[in-house]
Length: 343
Image (cartoon, rainbow, N blue to C red; front, side, top):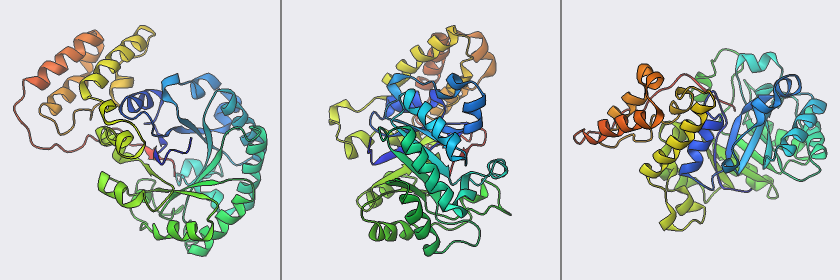
């Protein structure tokens, strides 16, 4: 399960359909669910939140909550449903998460996080890892000593892998979007954590946008987690398995193959009553930067075509549009509806 590369959990984005699409591009990268709250699992439709396609492995479930007993029950559910790891969110700064007294505010209570991790580990009987995703600080508590002490206390509960978003979270005065950019990145904190805790694994998150940064950081840390960059330019993941995850070069995916597999997947879900747009919205940048990519995307964004054409006919029209286009310059990325990277 110790993949050195991961795609971050992102609310409204990394649902099961997005993950299935990503898995066709990279076979080995660790994928994450959206954050699922303990309340949603304990009092809602468990299957709706936890079901996934077998092809999505390796797959981690991210939980949001603060009560050790509730988190333990949800971790047990995660193991029963076959997840490869359970992750506790201690980094999301959104006001909605703060009202639930979890996410980034948990960094102020490392003893509670330690107890939660211990309870979750007991619940899964050590069968799968319990990991923690967190910031380097909250508000004015942003010294290295603060995050060092947080990690040291939480590790007492049995956590061995920490995914560190290398910027502080401002819980008062900044929006979740601003919290992704305004507090400065301080990845040097992660390097120091590795020196201070040589028996633990530290995964760098935050600010990773391209292959050059991956090449710079992967030799220095246990792993790297990529968020919005992977969603906005999914084909950046196409070379990951070969370059870093031990896959033979001949097995690299082709865009046409991924598109064909997604057509079958979408058609199957449409027969079950799901509107194709619930899936196609995640694919809009498959041909980003390629000739005709913009025209292909326009077809898959057309509400009338999505509602009236069969899935094969929809993609045939998109393909015809793409192939009819002359060479185009690089395009700006598509900006779907706002999503929150959960830490």
